[in-house]
Structures are given as C-alpha cells and as structure tokens.
Image (spheres, rainbow, N blue to C red):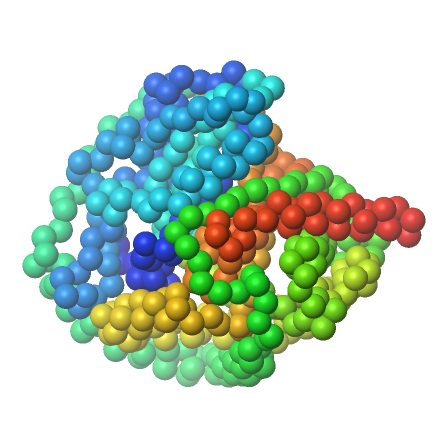
Length: 465
C-alpha cells in the first residue's frame, strides 16, 4: 500500500460531473494498424514497468486519512483497452471529435484509473493510440513516462514473455483506519526532521524560507482580478480538442536568433494565438490583462519516472495586448525571466506541502466547495492554463510501428474555458488545445493563431539571421 500525496489526492477531491481531471495523449503511428489482440498482448506484457496500471484507489473510511494505492486483484486489461474506428474520411476533424468525446467521460474509480483506445480508419493508412490517465496518477512529466513505458525504443526489440503478476491482498477498511491513525501519530516526526535540518544547514533553510516568502508576495500581486473576458466562466461536462504542431528545429532557430528559450517561443506562440481568438470574439485585447497558470515541475532527475505529481505553478501575464509577434516574444521572455527570479514555484510547493498537515476530510471538503463555487461564480484571476513538457527526444515504437506524432491533452476546470498543453517529441513540438464545448467551440481559431504566430516569428528570425 502507498499513500497518495496531498497534491495527488486533490485531483480526486475536485472531480465531479463537470470537472474531469484526466490527462491524455493522442499518438499517431505509421500503418498498418495492429489487431486488437496484438495491442492487448503488447501492452499487457509491459504493465510490470509501471505499477499504477494495475492499482486502484482505496479511500479511508470517514476520510480520516489520505487515500492509498492498492493492487487490483480483479484486474482485466480488456476493461481498459478498447477499439474505435473513425468515420470517413478519417481526417483531423474526425479524430479531434473522437478525442473530445472520449475526454468528456469520467474514468471508473472501481478500477485502475486509465484507458486506451486503438483508433483505425485514419487517412493515409495511419492509426492512433489514445491514452487517458487520471491526474492523481501522474503529472505531465511522469505521465509522459507512463506512456513511454508501454512503448519500445527499437523498432524490433528482443521478444519478451509476459511476466506473471501476483497482486498483494486488498486492505480491509479496518486496516486502512489503523494505518491512517499510525500515519497521523508519526506525523510529528517530520517536524523533528525539519528542525534537525535547520540545525545542520541553517543557511540553506533560511534561503529557502526567504525564497518561499518572496514567492508568496509575488503570488499576491497576481491574485488581483483582471477585467472579465469570454474565456473565463462556468463550463459544462463536454470538451472540444484540437492540435497544431511545428518543427522543434524552427523553435530553436527562433530562440537562437533573438536570444530566448524554446519555452519562450512556445508561450509566445500561444499568446499570439490567444490574441487572435479574442479578436474574433470582439474582445478589447489592446487594453487587456490576461493571465495563465503555468505548471512547473519540481522533481529531480532521479524522480522523473516516479508515478506521482511533483509540480508547482507560476502565474504569468501573457501580453495579448501586443500586436507585433516579435515584441510579443520579447515581452514573454521578460515576463518568464522575471518569474524565475520571483520563486513563485517555491511558494506553490510550500503551500501544497501545508495541505499534508491539515485533516484530510477538511481538505476534501474545502476543495469540493471551491469547485462548486467556481461552477456558479466566475473568477478572473486565472484566464487559462499553459503547460509545457519535454517528451522523448528519440523515436518510439509499438509493435514495430513508429510513433510520428505525440499530441497532448490538458484538463480544464470551472472558471477556465481553454487550456493548452505543449509537448516535444523527436524533433516535433505539439500544441494540444482543450476547450469547453459550449463556451469555447472555436479552439480551431486558437490553433490557427498559434500556427500563424510561429510562422511570423520564423520569418522574422530568418530576416534577423
């Protein structure tokens, strides 16, 4: 048994019939498509690489402690791997529509919290694998690792036999209560360890506390509400999704030409796209303040493959008021550079850690109450969410077929109607855009704006070179 962290558990507490806290991807492969049986066998033989695929969440009675992971003795892979076919002509529009429908359904909490769909019928003889996991299992970095675990780094790897799996016994309700009580009883020891750290490394601890304090001050400056806009407000249960992708080498070339990072280029492309989307909605962008929550990984290299959430967040002002693409890029660079020095990520990590010292039932009640409030009363502090994850740099394969496109999906929550996930893979940079079906059916406009923005920056970088 393994206890969920406060951050992992929070993604379970906030979920309801409207808020679906699932992260996902749509991977495109060269053809021909495998059979359903071949895919089931290929995935099944690799599940021992990631234990979460065969574990369920067990809640402690009366929420006297955080939920735990336990082996699912009744695990059946065919409950998780499905097959679907696109209607003709099997193009991007049909695939996006399928993705939106699949992401509008909640996962069954009685089983391990993941599903996969083999999708054939794509044009040009290609096929897709859509995978979906609950956010309590992983963040963007570890979620990419979970997906990569069922793939191969070689087209024709050495054949392996499926290893037998023996689940550990399911814990009883009484054992869950006893373990929760034991965990509460030992919690003070963590405070003693913290005190010991202050004695042995006082300068380091003081620096950390100073950084957290300055980060909280920076956060406070970003909590003042912005003016209302149409991308903020209540959402429904159904999702729209689309994507746009570019060559990673083009982003590197733009970054080198102007002395900025690839992340700066990607966020600038998103900002230009958001401006175009808001303009088509007749929003007053030239005087608009627009903020994005930007998740930031705080895991070390050794934690990269862990199945959990090790993420904080910063709040960035996106310059949608800037019309010139180059000026927008430079404004984004200045903003993100400033935020790195503000220690907002440290503050977010520290505030998340405080959840671990609060009663589980109280935390769950507060988070559910917040989501219910946001369903009926808009907030104007955060206008969107933008996440950027570095994916595998080498090509990956499944059943001898190469994955040539890796497209991300990010969930949205009440109050935020559009979210953007950015993932790099084998020389490609993909932008996956999630929108509320009722209030943001025009996500294609945002995708087109990102594409136009990156093209304009690339053209300017060529002139600068």
